[in-house]
Image (cartoon, rainbow, N blue to C red; front, side, top):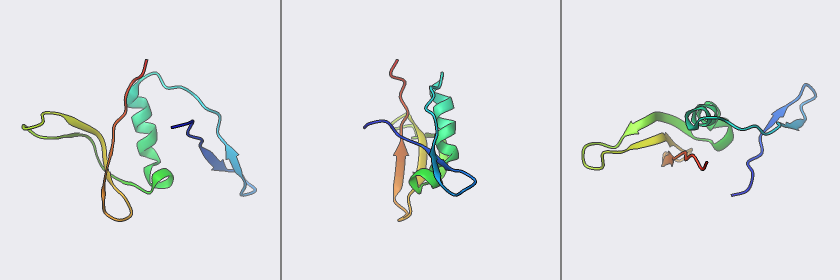
Length: 80
């Protein structure tokens, strides 16, 4: 995937591209994305750090539902 571009509406109602920035920690990126899930992706967040239970013994970073009620799983990774 290429760069993800984010925009905001200015006072005139025009789209203005936000400058890119880096985040130091994966959790910071996760919180920023979760804050705009509905606006960016149309996904309603159900849980953060959702435990997958004793069989898989893992966790899902962000779990949500899309407009159709289908589950959405978002995994954040640190590529440093």
